[in-house]
Image 1 (cartoon, rainbow, N blue to C red):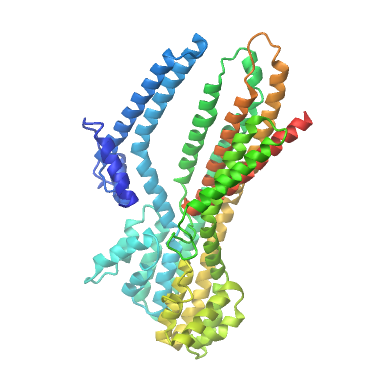
Image 2: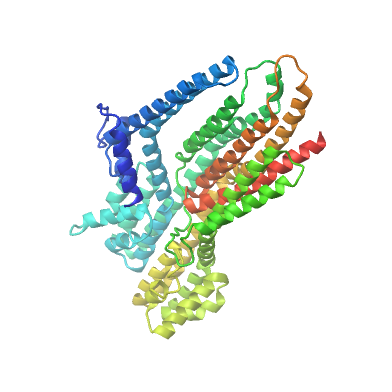
Amino acid sequence: MTRAERIADSLELLARCWPWPVEVGGTGTDGDDETADLPRALAYLDAGVDAETVRRAGNGAAALVALVGTVVAALAAFAPLGSSTLGSSVVALALALTLALALGVVSLSRRGPVALATASRTAALGTAPALVARAVLRTRVEPASERAAEFAARGEGRLAAALADHVRRAEGTPRSGLAAFGAAWADWNPPLRRAVLLVESAADAPAGERETALDRAMTAILDGTHDRMAAFAEEVRGPTTALYAFGVLLPLALVAVLPAARVAGVPLSIPVLVVVYDLLLPAALVAAGGWLAVRRPAAFPPPDVSRDHPDVPDRRWPAVGAGVAVGAGLLALVTLTPLPGWTRWPAMGGTGLGTALVWWFRPVEEVRADARAAEANLTDALYLVGRRVRDGAAVETAIAEAAPEVAGRTGEMLADAAGIQRRLRVGVREAFLGEYGALADVPSSQSRSVASLLAIAAREGRPAGRAIVAMADHVEDLQRVEREARRELASVTGTLRNTAAIFGPLVGGATIALADGMAAGAGTGTLGEPLPTAALGVAVSTYVLLMAAVLTALATGLERGFDRGLVGYRVGLALLCAVGSLLVGFVGAGFAA
């Protein structure tokens, strides 16, 4: 059973807890009807359930939360908590938290699928420049819009799959599917529609006008992507600053005054502190981060690496064992130091989880690093191969001759392909993309697209040399627009990452140390007892580690999309850095005091 099927079964089970009818709204056919958002989102996600089931499941889950919360509150009302005031506050807190969670579950059931569909479309649109480039390059080799659409649809990702669906529908008709595909995505990316229409028109244009139309198609998608990302980076700067100020700096600054506030008579308790810092604040960070992420116009996802890759192990126990070993080791180390006892738990938990994540996802990142290295000098490779083909050399010969002149992993890839051609007596496609090809285990869609076009060029011969040289320019343009898009977001994502891993934990550790000093000095007050520093330290350090995970995931999602491997790896590194920064901040502020 797949994950989607398990989720669908769980939703249907929860829906049985709410037997009453619900209002579903639109059917998804009217694009301007907000009530149709949920049906459209579920259809796009291929969820396997309808909108009524999802809404009933949300209501059923909320009812279960309300039931459990009410039982907990009832038990707390009769529990011996030491004082009636504390008992009343715990009951009130449990009821308020139950209401908030129930309302949150209902809202999540309605808006969650819509947000997921939007994020999925955003990630898909990150491949739009590459898809248009494939169609343009295929048209340069052979001016046929049907073959260009078919070739572009062989790419990876949801956008290519959507184009493949339109190509299938257009079979047996005079249409190629490009125009219908562009119209379907026009609301989400207008430059994409313009670009594919230019590609379609270029196929029927005279030879002198064809090159101009194809160049305009590439300009439309590249400039459109760059402009939309630049506008988003400018728009997101203000909300991100507010998130940084009110979600990180202000809560950490308040830590230092909490002991004094308790002594002054403000009704603070450890349960309230835990709910605010470890539940409500992280939930607010997640909600704000999701709000920012779904407004991103496009993402440039990293190469897709599955656990089926031969260099990626699928056994989880080594990662779990490494996390347990490192966490236990740090627990023992902290125990032997003069640090207070509460520091053991965030140190053990943060380093253990961080180590497990890094261990589990590191092989994936190594495979991706190899794929990016293979793409690094593709422009040089294409130019050198194309120039030789234009001068009359066969593509196979041009690849072998150009390999020593291309630096790095790209040159090694060409040399491997040339060696496979020579030893196995196979063509260009098999040498790169076959079972034993140079790219068989390299998950680089850009490199594989180039190899496919080289295989087509090998059939065309010398006339394709000019098209291969043009490929070099297009590949360079694709890499440039991706670099510029990341650069536009660098100030935002860099601040989030640094805050998550270094500055936030440093401030958190320092403020806990200051709160410790204030609590010691306030212990003689007459209005109330200060908050225990141990409980305060555990609550705030838990918030710091949660903040490190959430902000790192948000920064990664804004930059590259919410890829599980990349997010997990970076979150693991952030947790390891956060633990060190937290302890350094606590010790440093303690010495300064």
